[in-house]
Every structure is written in C-alpha cells, then in structure tokens.
Image 1 (spheres, rainbow, N blue to C red):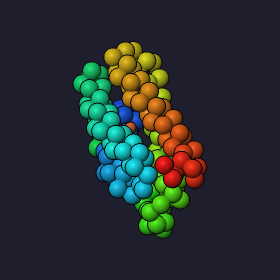
Image 2: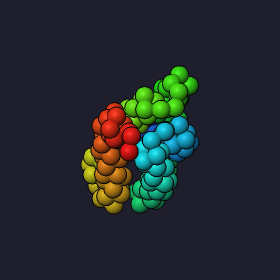
Image 3: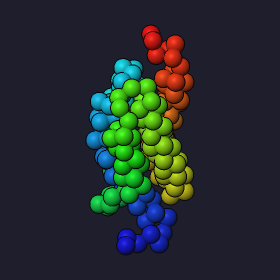
Length: 165
Ligand SMILES: [Fe+2]
C-alpha cells in the first residue's frame, strides 16, 4: 500500500489514479462510440476521446510543473464503471434504449472525474501549486461541459420525434 501520510502523497496518489482512469477511458470511449446508434452521440463519444488524450497530456504537464513522479496504480473505480457499460453493450441490442443506457454510463464516468479533478484542484491550491491547479481546472471544466452535453443527449434520444430526424 502506497503511503498517503501527507497532503502531497494524497495529491500524487489521486493524480496517478485519475491518470489510470483516463487511460482506461480512452479504450472504453472508442467502444461506446461504436455501440451508439445515434450518430451525434457516437460523434460526441469520439470528440471526448480526443479530449481525453489531451487530458492525459495535461496530467503529464501537472507532474512536470510540480516535479512529482506519478505512481503506477490502477483506478479500480473506473474499471468498475467501464465494466458496467460493457454489460449494457452485451445485454441490449443497438438502438435508442442502449443509447440511453450508454449516456447514463458515460455520465457516471464524468461525475467520477468531476469529483476527482475537483479534489485535485483543491489539493493543488493547498499545496501552493498554482500552475498545476490551473491545468487541473481546465480539465475539470471540460468534464463538466461533457456532462452537460450528455444531459442534452439524454433528452434528445428519449424523444421519439427527435429520433426520427
Ligand atoms: Fe477525462
């Protein structure tokens, strides 16, 4: 078990955890994009995949700015969230019901990330790591925007008139 005695240890652990989460997510988002029937939803997953690559780079920038070394750990929370999305894909045929399920699964992921980046942002500030806090806030804002976009899709996909378009 890695030591998490100080705020700095906690920060490094949390940053390494979200690094693992983002890496796992890049693989999952490609699959979500393929599994969505709604074209715009599929594109939104693809767009967030590109954004996620940028967020991974940003974590490297945070490590560089702070001089902290990332640990090799696995984010088991993200692993579980992805597993649940995978179950939906296996159980439901492609269509509006699966699309609705995929939106919900993706929103759980975004909420997890929003919590993670919000905490990291606060920790960075407490540690006096201003540059790191700024970078983490950028990702936090991207995750929030993605979550809102998904909320919009949830209404659209569930609306039969919108579906016919
Ligand atoms: Fe992310």
